[in-house]
Length: 110
Image (cartoon, one colour):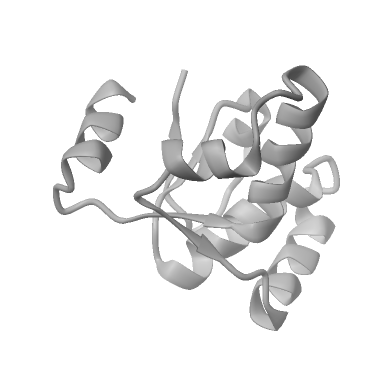
């Protein structure tokens, strides 16, 4: 994870995207756990990260994943849907994802 964060910070050839659904989850958690942190501060901290709209295609993919992985949250499925549409790696700290049998590459950050 440290190497990934260093690559993002240095501007190396590393593209990081986050779904608007997952951005909302982060903001919700921040408001609950540390209300003094503003969305602007989070944006500055994650300045190299591209915020991606949760569109119709992502919604359809996420809905499909609810059939296969009913225990996954909307945020989990939104992340997988974005990785699917971008042909990218999905990152998680959630060990429940070890059960995911998808075409998507999943990297565990812990």
